[in-house]
Length: 365
Ligand SMILES: Nc1ncnc2c1ncn2[C@@H]1O[C@H](COP(=O)(O)OP(=O)(O)OP(=O)(O)O)[C@@H](O)[C@H]1O
Ligand SMILES: [Mg+2]
Image (tube, rainbow, N blue to C red; front, side):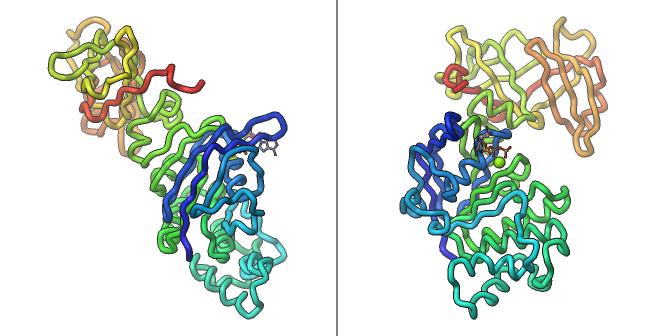
């Protein structure tokens, strides 16, 4: 199977007067797996359909292996696409569905069955080749759809929420399976999902899309540990945004000032260009990176206090009210016993887990 790079630059797409894509830049190395995350309506499907050639962007360039895709019709682009709803032909068998794309491309009859069988084998379904879609489970149908996309030996695989219709257990199985196949073939893939855990578990790279633009691109760790904006931090969720004055601590760092019971600091270096003129900034810390230390009742007035706690299976989720607003921490059960509701606490985190967000005025609103 060939494997290709993808370069999308300045792509704009309008549906009538509505602009769905507002200048998309995206680049993928050959063999990379990109997860595209973003709220409903932000343009994920529009982007995939533009890459596939089903939509005609009014501006920008799309290149696969350096080759301009814009003048090409969808079939000439040789891309494999899997949709959220499998869209299998009900009257064709699994094998017939997989062979269909080849048939359209004028593949010789003798080759058809062999290649389709190989593709079904790849997704572990060659034993069900004669079944029709209604005789297959959701996961099996999705595998047929995947085999159908792969059988043409695509340069690029485009997957639009392919696992969205599956129940959780099957979905997790298929995540592993899909990633295994993608890696084995080395095929470059763009994968749309609503599910952040799924993106995290599967992707080499994550792009967060918002309202027709790519808000942030990075490795899963970077995206989740250091969101590039307030919006990205809030979209990704499970993190805390703490806003306040940051004052030099004389040790090469800046401490969050004037918030009793909250002990957070960043290095001066990390703060370069990210503080407002009045010295205020917004810190981002993920819930599982916060440490809560129980304090005695004689704590200073206005200090941080536990407002609720609940058991989530592995962690306790503990909410704390602070002078800078509420924060949410995920703590181990052994620490949770001292963190009863009303208890004063100190909220802290290792400096490398605390990120100062860029100033909001740099953000698109
Ligand atoms: N054919 C169309 N004509 C007009 N507007 C459209 C068309 N297709 C999509 N849109 C609009 O473009 C925007 C982006 O749609 P798109 O389907 O790309 O979003 P999405 O990110 O895939 O959303 P979801 O997560 O719900 O699938 C939406 O506001 C949608 O209403
Ligand atoms: Mg969509």
